[in-house]
Image (cartoon, rainbow, N blue to C red):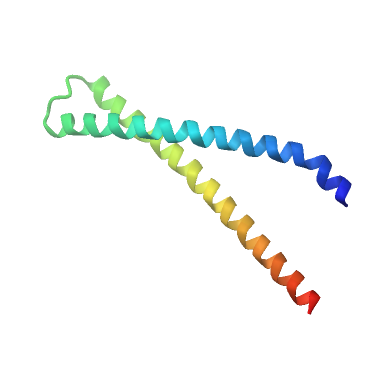
Length: 98
């Protein structure tokens, strides 16, 4: 069983690195989008967006930010499930030792 764990570890680490890189990129992108959306919404409320295209740009950036937030929610759900599983396994192991 230990051989299986060692064989899977590099793949698991690579997946974690990729996930971490994606999250880092998304954090930066979310900040930019939030700033852009805030600026554009202020202009929209003031009636100073000059074109339909600018209104569409706001909608597209909101949609992109929603996609990032959905990815984050999915990631957190996965992490919560992992933690719950680890906690359950730890509890089972502790009870078995007793």
